[in-house]
Length: 119
Image 1 (cartoon, helix red, strand yellow):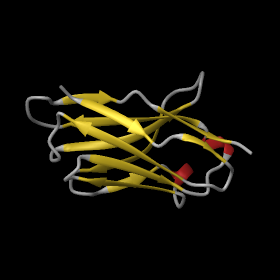
Image 2 (cartoon, rainbow, N blue to C red):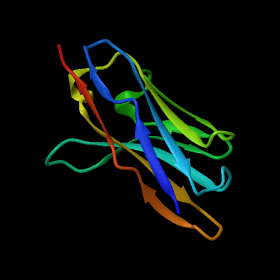
Image 3 (spheres, rainbow, N blue to C red):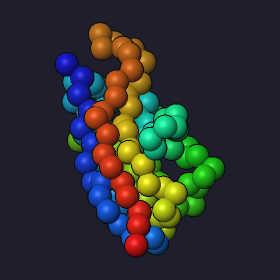
Image 4 (cartoon, rainbow, N blue to C red):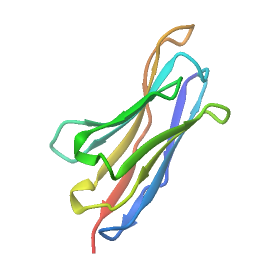
């Protein structure tokens, strides 16, 4: 059974930092892409960053220079380091795994973690 569990969200002041973690279980560290999305009430879920098994990554223009995505293939964890946070970064952040091959091929979501940026 594939499971994604996010952690690390919370309340932070503008200019602060947070590191989100997403622990993946039930999937191999290879042949997958791990992504972070965020969503505010009433709006669509937006892609923030993604990273492939080989380490190739990208982040959305809106967070470029402030957010960094990384992964630990041994622990099967993907991280989102968020620096210089702004009030507009407030959202629920979701982890998504896209498994490209194998018996659990498919797409999976975590339950989300709230990030609130406010003074």
